[in-house]
Image (cartoon, rainbow, N blue to C red; front, side):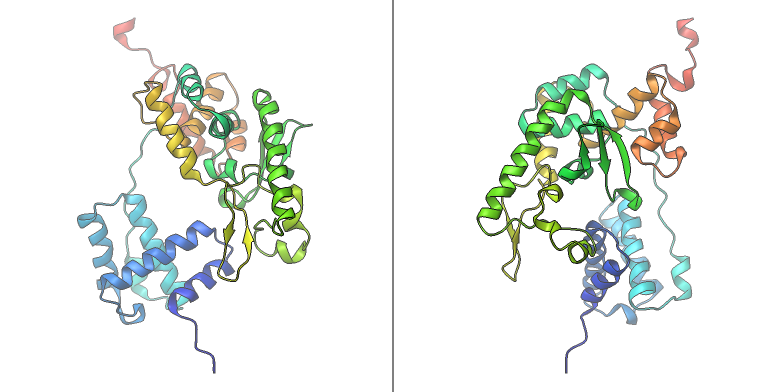
Length: 319
């Protein structure tokens, strides 16, 4: 008789059944494991509001985590009790989410963007040019597949982005040549993998079953493949896309070399993309669509960092 799946395996199954992202799965499993270990490996079904609040308070007071991190841990606990253990207990509704601070995004000037990009080289430079030139999130850029780059129409299709909504954005003419070369290099890497007996790429959900030839199809390969292949416990081997830490480290180093005093991250270029478009008079709804925001109120944050000052009001000292 087979053993029932362990709790954390049940969590993974429940997450995958709802088509949540891989990152959500990893985060939920991590927080639930920490919750259990915090209470001496006591089973969650034997715990309640007191234990849950104690864990969340520990994160806030002792670990001094941010409000967003604390809320992520709370979401993991709510998912555990409601979706995995099927225990919609009344006290779950009494767990209060931490109040998130509202911070204005860090935005670079056009000259600062150029100065940082000038310090980058090779793949890192091309990726950052896409972050700024197309308004992509870092993982959206790294997870681009060859078929989603349309050179003829000058556009990029972002698949399965945040909120599971596809969108299109512009392909900057400046990177056309370099991106074509990158696609050729990615194709050559794929052909080498095929010659070595591998060459399969990960596909989301059930696409690998629906399209059995797709994993080895060149069109489905990553534009930015990793330098090494992965191998799982069953001996299967494939190649993932470039890891985000490689670009993050490159951006941090480039900002220091460029002498930028602001805190520059990969997401700073997406913020700068939106702000610079609004400064040039583009409609906020258009910018919202290019960014893939569900609500225009999210895009509105960039109106507070435009170059014409706070709410466009001129200081009386300058009159």
